[in-house]
Length: 183
Image (tube, helix red, strand yellow):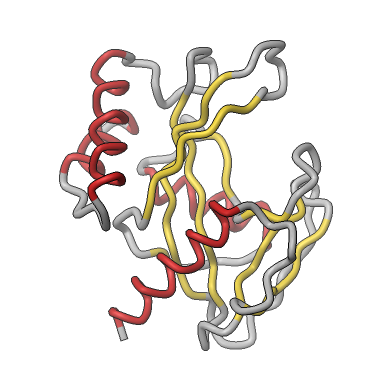
């Protein structure tokens, strides 16, 4: 199965947590239907990306990356690569690259977020159609700063940086709900 087909499968079968997220999933599916290259970074109108909120094993902290270009604390994530078999695989790879962790992710997206951004190599803004996952680190997991990250840190879920984007706070809350239900 291609990454494009996996994206359609994952979003068409997704049990969205709210009507607005269900509507966003339909918009993603429309974009995928219109653009066979929607999973490729070269798709200049926009492209799918994958990210993951990683919680400590006890669900008390989240691992965030200080993004070098944006200059803000974000969940690890980024562009899909041709070697990624699924959206969840792409998110898992991004966690490995940006936090230095191997993590098991819930295979179903937790939320979606579409945002404008100017990618490297572009002069005009494009859109990231981000598919966001959630996972829990193994007990005692330690974060590692890599070439992909300026800094990484475990932040208490109730003590996130004051200037963190609302979308990060929403992902933390959605992730907590998902992981608490799995217990």
